[in-house]
Amino acid sequence: MTEAAATDALSGGLTGALGPVELATRVRGRTTSAREAVAAALARIDAHDGATAAFVAVDGDRALAEAAAIDERIAAGRPAGPLAGVPIGVKDLEDAIGFRTTRGSLLHAEDAPATRDSILVARLRAAGCVVVGKTNTPEGGWTAATFNRLFPPTRNPWDLERTPGGSSGGSAAAVAAGLVPLATASDGGGSLRIPAALCGLTALKPSLGRVPAGGPRPPSWGDCTSGGVLTRRIRDGAAALESIVGPDPSDLRSLPMPTEPWAHSLDDLGTPRRVAWSPDLGYAEVDAAVLAACEHAVGVLADLGTEVVEVPTLFAEDPVETWLAITASYDWEQVADLEGTPDWDRLEPGRLAAIAWAGRSVDARRLVRAERACHDLNLRLVEVLHGHTVLLTPTVAGRAPRIASGTRGEVNGAERDDWVRLTYPFNLTRSPAGTVRAGLDPDGLPIGLQVIGPQHGDVAVLRTLALLEDALAPYDYPFPP
Image 1 (cartoon, rainbow, N blue to C red):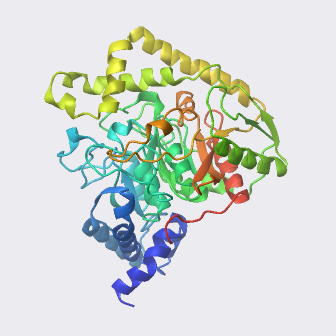
Image 2: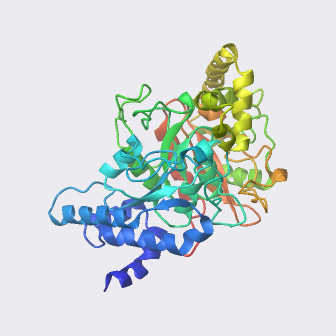
């Protein structure tokens, strides 16, 4: 079979159906070459990314050359890594050698290409992954829909008139559409969980410090953001995370290596004895279809033998101002010196409004109060999780919003309010939290159920996600595999 014919035959199967673990197994076993896997991803991107706009940059020549080097190592009998030959996308908030890191901003549109990888990308490369390109993100990751002034808006593969969420929307759309089997993501307020839920993926936001965020620059949102990956299924996600978790001396918050491989903990699943269930955390208005799907998923868990304890009010009030006081203050510090210069007007207007609010209203005392509020929120979560394995809530309060016509990708105003109010509390508590597809809404779009664990209880979340993923509907494809 010629390489062109192999690419045609494999483009759907290798990136549209196989997960990264199975694909890497084939590459190491030489039943598929890394070059074939990467060529298949490039063909899939060429065929479908015109519709989704998940990628903002692709370098096929570089990726094919890296894949060929992996094939040479395997042919020579040298180790190629547990993720050998897996093509990946990298969220455009982090560095990947040879690509600009635009951060979705006009301010960085002409930056020189990165000469070093972020820690997350470097560890994935060391595991054998091949970076094929950068995935779209809103400017600075500031919002839950993926649009900016540089690139076309990213669209949800399940319905191209709707957003895939954000800020890891490009990565989520790329994985859901089968363009690549793995992409990097980050989550400072729901930026991994929201797009995973809207695109039908199962994913984990690890505990703060699991994936180190060190390097030459400090983390952009302090103690709110965790790095991670997106895959279709959680067992693949757990296997990929094993290659990137662990300490780094440049990250003040990085945690030690887990004592056991995470993927091994998913081999023999038992049902949790008792879980907590909060339909709206006590303050959010949840769409009826979203609530019904999540209640069904919780009922499936109960049918398996788990005791479900409802917690009507988890938090006394919406902690959004606490979250904004912290995250927008970090953004303000980064751009305050631009005020009064032409570059100030090059910032995204919506982001600028939030940044300006923080700069003008959040003083040192208010910021310290916000940090202390995180402690209080965590105390409440500890209280609720006492005697419960995990907490369950909807991931997103509303259905995937439509992209407003005549805009650069903003969602319809009528569908905008309150639909992302359920994720940021668990960035403030630094908790591990994931999402699994609970079902489909009346329009056939995915609905996510959120799973939150205790401090550093990543394995409890992973096991619950895997159990629910096995018990609920299997993954299906928005685009033909």
